[in-house]
Amino acid sequence: MYMKPNSYIYPYVAFNDLSNKDIKNNLIERKEISLSQLKELIFDIKKPQPTIKGENLLERILSLFLDEEILFGPRDHIETNKKYWQERLSYFIAKNEPIQFTLLGLPFKIPVPLKTNRVLPDMGEVLFLLRLNSISELISNEYKPGAKITILAEDLFADFVGISESEAEQYYLAVKELNEKLGFSKNIEIISFKIIHDHVDNFPHIYEEKIFEHEKLYQNNDKDFLTKYNNTYDILKKIVTSKKYDNELLMDVYNDNLSNEQISDEVLKIRDELDKKAHQAVLKYFALLKLRDEVDLLEKLVPCSLSLSVAPKLNRLGIIPINKDSNRLPYHAVPVYDNGKFTLEYLIDIKRDAGKYLSIYFHEDKENKPFYYEKK
Image (cartoon, rainbow, N blue to C red; front, top):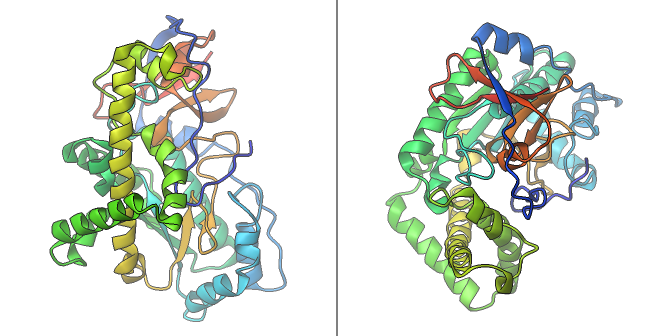
C-alpha cells in the first residue's frame, strides 16, 4: 500500500463503488471476547521489524523512522533535516532520560455512518496504540531509558465536524481507559487538547478572532491560505457529520462519480449542506492549529519533544498508523480481522461484501456495537 501523504491532514480514501447499493445480510454470528482474550490477540500480532543501522546511537534511532515498516511520507523529510532530529534526540540522551515524542490524534469517531456507526473507540484505536507502543519498545532496545509518547487528543475539534462535546468526551475517556487496561500507559500518555484553554487567555474570544482572520484570508484569495484550504476542504467535507441521513441517500451524496445533474434535489441539498459545513470546518481547523502554534503548545507541554505525525512535514516524523495494509485512520473506519491480519475498512463496504463476517463484541465495551469484525 502506498498513499501520497498530505502535509495538512490525513489523506482521504475513497469508498468502493457507491453505485452498488446491494446491502448483504452477511453478519452471520455474534461473539464476545474478554480483556484477557483481547490482550492475547493483539500481543500475538507480528510487530514491525525495522532494519536499524548507523554508526552511532543517534543514527540508529533515527534509522527506525526511515524503515518502510514505519515511515509514512518522503524520506527527505527526515534525511534533509537530520541535524534537527539528532539535536532533539541528543537533548534527552545527554541527560539519560526517556526520549519524548508528541503526536496529535485520536479525536473522536468520525460521524459519517457509511464509515463507522460507533461513538466509542474499538480495535482500531487499540491497534494504533499498539503501533505506538511498539515504536517505544523498539527504541528501548537501542537506548535503555526508552521513549515516551504523548498524544494530544484532538477532542476540541468536535465542534467543527458537528458532534457533541459529550460524545467527544466519552471517546477520550474510553481511549485513556483502554490505554491503561492494555498496559500501554507506561509508554503512552494521552491528554486533551482542551488544555490549550490554560495557555490562551479568553480562549473562546481569541478562537473566534482566528476564525474571522482565516475567513478574510479566504475572501481575499490569499495564495498561501488557499493552498492549505484546497488541500483540506475535500477531506473535511467527508468527515463532517451526516448522521441524520440514511445510508441509501448518503451513498449518492458521497458518490464522486455522480454529478449534480444525476442526483435528486434531496441529495443535492445534503451536498450543499456538507459543503457549507466543510467550509466552516476548514476555518476552525486552521484557527485551532494557528493558536496551537502561536502559544507553542506542544513545546510547553513536552519541551524538546520530537513530533510524530500521520500528516508528515519537514519537522515531523511521519509514521504509518496501523500497518502497511491499512490506509485509513482508526477513527475513520471499522477494524476487520482476516487470515491473521487486521485492516481498517469502511462499514458500508463490509455490508456490501460477498463474504461472511462475525461481529466481535468486547466484554468491557460500554457501547453495544461490534468492537471489530472477523471475515470467515
